[in-house]
Image (cartoon, rainbow, N blue to C red; front, side, top):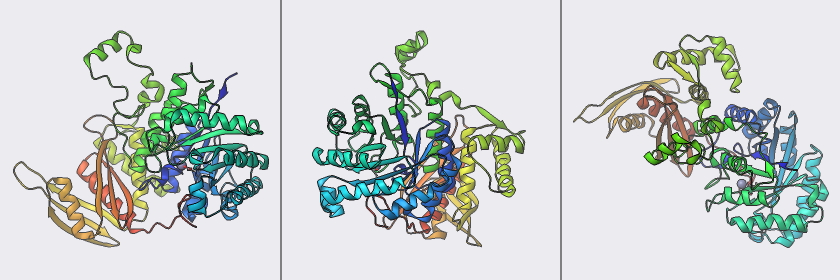
Length: 515
Ligand code: KIV
Ligand code: ZN
């Protein structure tokens, strides 16, 4: 009998730990809804004790999701577990994921604890989590560098204490596929009660092996994979959900488990949603979700594909959602059609006023661009939310002069708090001039780390979606902006990043920070 492979998505938790990838509560709910549409089994919504905002986001996801299990992360500490239990109270199905490090280096240098103390704390944490839910997951952090004898003792004890899932993280992405697969097989063989729990894996991509390690683990009996959309995550990221899922689906000849319960046509729309919200662009040659993943440039390939698709294609583009990009609304669509489609995309408006404001923006966009796709709607809502949040600066007007042989010049009017001010600046191009003019007013002291433009849909009337990454005093933020005019989109993204960097981020990191 083939087992079902449990897909545990941690885009909203580990993905959000990427510098600059923080998401608002509403953005998390939208992504969670997209994951639910894909039929992802478990959605790790965040680390509730990190800050009141993180708590509220987990709570909001727990309320909004019906079909997937919603999970909250907690260190093996009473206060973390109680907070996670509280945040998940209203979940239809809630899971607490608790963890403590088990590698010699983490126990000695980070925790300053003896192995027996770690074991005792792990058991205590699992028992406490069971007070809130029957669905408890335990992770021995840095398992990939832990001693196997100790790992076996900890795993046996936490299963006996009530953990139904044991997750083996390669926290620092150090393992190689064969080695990691062997680790999973040996743990399952050596831990006496291993048949009482689902073995899961959580691989980081520091050596570019996160997906390979996860798949090797699955071939050795792991039945849950923790992953993120687009491979987002700490440092080099986590295993990419789309790659794990499509590998198991495409190579069912080598796996004795399936992912048939997933709606893989939701992969590309969800990938776009995540990159639009976080500002982390997807590289064109990225497997499955990159713009070139199914493009056949070379003549030989095109010829082969025309004769028989399988000469060069092992998957169908439509199976991962490339053709799901359909025109949904246009200039004549009414408020009801607009609200209904957004509801299907997981967006609910808090008030009629909010709906009216978004609808007015939609009409403005429909005047410039005749065919409005889901991606346009998602960008429009992201924009509305961004403006509503922490808005100190607002772009009121922008004028740029750019002509052959002349230095580009921009005039910008910003509303700062409640006062409107205007400034001008020259630049090497229109975008550079616009950013310099904004800086004449803002004096932000930030450094521009990244500027990127992507078209949301195809065609020259597409909206450009711009990401601006700024750094100040070690803190990194991403700003986003979208418009059919890319200079305006760029100025909006810059202003959005300035608004974000003004607000101090008081939140703890689960693996390094103290609460
Ligand atoms: O990478 C890691 O070890 C983690 C744990 C919290 C599971 O993210
Ligand atoms: Zn991780």
